[in-house]
Picture 1 (tube, rainbow, N blue to C red):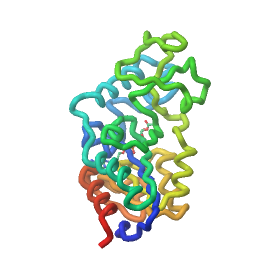
Picture 2 (spheres, rainbow, N blue to C red):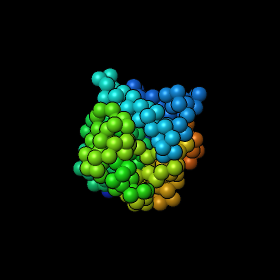
Picture 3 (cartoon, protein in one colour):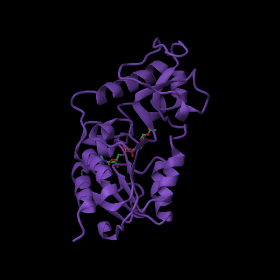
Picture 4 (cartoon, rainbow, N blue to C red):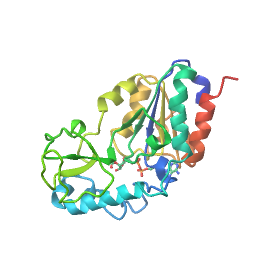
Amino acid sequence: MDIQNFIKPESNIVILTGAGISAESGIQTFRAADGLWENHCVEDVATPEAFIKNPALVQNFYNQRRSAILSANVKPNPAHYALAELEEKWGALNGGEALLITQNIDNLHERAGSRNVIHMHGELLKMFCTNCTLPMQNETAKKYDIQKDIDEHTLCSDCHESGTLRPDIVWFGEIPYHMDVCARALQNCDLFLSIGTSGNVYPAAGFVQEAMLAGALSAEINLEPSANASIFSTGFYGPASQKVPEFIQKLTAPPS
Ligand code: OAD
């Protein structure tokens, strides 16, 4: 299906990205064949229970991920740049809006120039204090920028407690951020585009159904068909750095 031929004026686009879009930028995806994430079970490093049980292990794990995304080798790739260009041009070209929802905790979309970005699983370069935050209020907690390591001695600048700062990551068992904004955007979207995600983690994996129930067309761009590939109107398979710019070039080309 050639989606580009069905796009009408004033069409809203929602783009969901996952780890696959950052793979060619040097950041490892989650679901490797061995099921481990950088040699850890996710339960040991990505749950609130893990943080209570072994805070040093969890902090160390995210300290390593943080320093990796800040390393000189990690840079946005052509897929990130193509999405930033789409956001910039789409309003003028079509009159609609383009919203980017990412499951990624890196900052590569922003570094490529995207501004309308929702980090539904949080951000590695932010932290918050569990002592200053009411339980279950992580989304609205006061966030602090962080580039260095956090450990049990790091003091909160507001309450001056130590050991209470944690990475601003949505862990398993916690509620993803900005679900109200996502739901509204999916209700009003005409094209839903999913890039570099395996379709295993909900609620993100259910966004395609929400969008299509609201009448949207949908496409996935991934290295291989995702877990819910059969639901999409169409799919384009190959490296994101090639397939995303190709798709966006066609989408934004003047009608022939
Ligand atoms: P996954 O690791 O589950 O899936 C990444 C997908 O990207 C796979 O389907 C790969 O085939 C595909 N892929 C790999 N390299 C690619 C490339 N160069 N171009 C295009 N596609 C490529 O990652 P996510 O689906 O993002 O949550 O995982 C979702 C969530 O699970 C993450 O946000 C994280 C994790 O647990 C939390 O930490 C809360």
